[in-house]
Amino acid sequence: MRTRRFKEVSVNECSVDDLRAFCGTLPEQHWLECEDDKKVYRLSVNWDGLRELEENGDLVSLVAQDQGEVIGYSITVLCAPIHADMAFVGVNHGLFVKKDHRSGGLGARLILATESAVRQRGATAMNWHAKPATAMDRVMSRMGYDVRHTAYSRRL
Image (cartoon, rainbow, N blue to C red):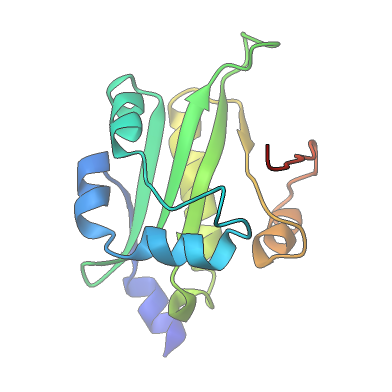
């Protein structure tokens, strides 16, 4: 049953306005599940900032839909690193799939679709963020990604 449902799920690029209109509570679900410092990182999607990136051609937004319902998304910013301006890199800022749609490889499908979309725009590398010991952390190594950076954070 899960396999059949997975085949019915479409993954497509979308505009920021469509993402905002149709993603429902997914950003909140993502935040509730993944954010471990909710006092500093309060839920407030910067739709205007995303729209500006989109207008400049620096954003790739994808949604996974099951019979019209948005059940997942991937949001990636395209940029040239300040220390390597000849490179063009996709940096993912959000990958999420509803819990009841996670088995069957939909997350991997979103990752591959994101890679394809940024490659089509000229990116030569892709960066993802994953918290340690999470499903995303485990998936990335299975998909051939290496740990290249470690991020540190503290409240100020």
